[in-house]
Length: 402
Image 1: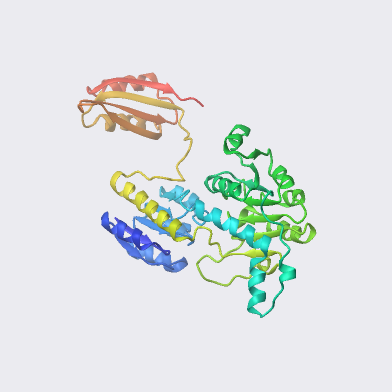
Image 2: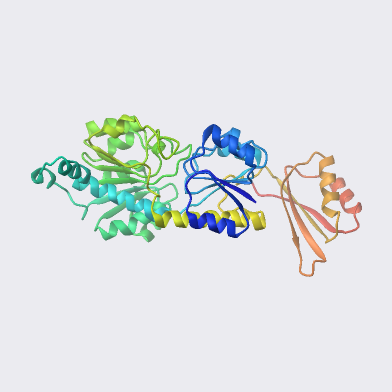
């Protein structure tokens, strides 16, 4: 199996892919037209990327079967185009959770102690102990978390270690789950904003979360509070944040921005980076050796499973609920032609198969097929299928629950 890796990737992962029999093409930094050319020429079955954009023209090249995002988010991949072409998209969730949580706390401490400004002053030969001695401290402060996924959950024990109180909101968070985590449940993001000295955002980017942290949220924040975002720049209404920096004296630590270069290097002219109350980093939340080794190992696991079983762990673009309304259950002798006979009859009736599995019983003498259909076959059709093949033992239709 040919694997094209278009971004930097750990050497341990490269060696592991070769060890399982993959033909590895390591071309970090390949993007845009050059990546289209590489996919066209090399015909990889698998494409591995980190920050590189994967567009519809790349996905539509013949031969590509799987795209692995060597990281958690997959907003740089045209998932809709992949779904139209039947190309799997997979990711590596949770492998960088600790690294991102660590950076979130680094940004909090940097804001509180004004670490970058200290460094700049010293490098200029200036000693400003009086100015830089003014810090609030984290102990006893309230940390508000938006999004209790794997990264958000990693924030909780670290906040406890600093002696902080934690309040949280997440779409899936319930009061019971919050109590089990040892945090205070809040019903809305605005409730988190009102209760927090520091807010840390850990929301996945979806159509529902895009620009969801906006003017209403910042209006609810306490004056002078800290705002940390290490998730995705697009979940924040950036103009609303800039306005809050001035009007509410909010200070922000940002690892992500609304508009970022597509590669690891490039010009960055977003004016928010020049705001004196903003400390920014270069979307490096996942960039620790520990996290990258874990992501490489998970990428190898995904590709190995696909190579050896045809199944893809962590796939993100399979239909959660198909249009199927009925299941055709065919109990049969495990002989050639049974399924072909059944599928031909369905084709003749213009009934579409949505999902199908064939389970073989011990001894490999009998099997049972479950075939999900977009409508129910007529009774006379069922009788025709059963009568047309002597290896069919029983056939029935089950109406699926809505």
